[in-house]
Figure 1: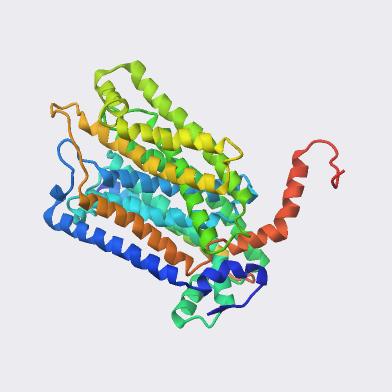
Figure 2: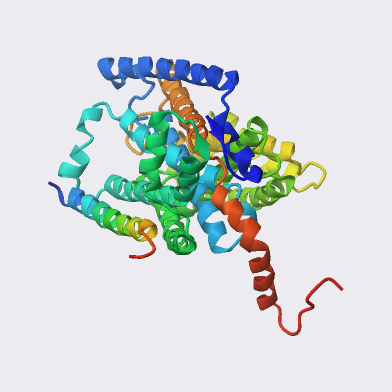
Length: 449
Length: 32
């Protein structure tokens, strides 16, 4: 297969045209991890949830942590692509495709984690058959499904012009690939009118998804917040979940973009200035996350209710302190120290911080889900939860499957939206100049004086 | 079917029809 088209776009199609040995090694390694997870899931399916560390009163463990984490990760797409589109932030362009792909590929593992947590996954459809709308679980099914559908269409709309480019520019492709591009392109011609329509549709979807992203993660938090479990039953849990999700999502995006830039040599398209914008975004979110965490804890402290204080103490000073304080370190202290300093706010600095934030966010979800269940209102005594190898294997498998989907995607479609780059080249400079002029009162000089 | 299931399926169906219409409008030939 070879690429025939404008030279300036060749680098964007290179990952599709050329596949090195590293790709097969990576796919092989990911498949091994997925197989390990499949074995663990088979054991869980045949032997029951007894193979996990779940017990009375701790009936939610790492699967639910994964659920909240992956749903949070999916917000990277909407935030970067939709919100930055609404505010016309031009630096978003190389990031949108990867961000939307993160959304699309993380959502199935978020929703799927609920399936893994069921002792009888075959009863999943009972949610639809017998679901009662008083249950927050059903609100979750409704909002996550709608989010998944909306994100899929949003992703597809933005992918259409690039699928057509693949159809037209990739020569000597195998028949399956040719047919795939032909079908998925839906006869896209790339006329000016179609691009105008595309921008209208994307604007509508961006507004819709911005609303949806906030409601989805708030509704996810209600699974916890609508119970009277100490530590969960707070009106603030929605925004608290949301800010963590956005922080983790943007951090994941910066890691993905760093890897893609390095592996596929996209330095010309993803520049230090892009990472600088992301790093400032991360810095603001990290401060916000800390403020929200502080608000959560100070409210509980001032309320001084014994049941709530038991969870407070467990997290801050007792058995969960060894997880809680590293979370503060990874999600607040390190990001602020590294990103507030222009000398360390480099690409490497941003990526190291992002890796820490993602580890920290996963652990943060753990400290939200598990500690509250260890000290129930019912007279159970203090619960203990230790995840088993089956749970770790399935968790590793979920992450590996997410990585595999993303890797395969990069071999079929461009990882940077080619049409967005074209649009930036052809229209954005003029449009942005005009826009800035329209903001400024009084006479504006036509050139630098 | 439970009332919850009906609400979930109805909202999904409405959204699907709206998005599909957008997609049709997006790719329809210019001369239509």
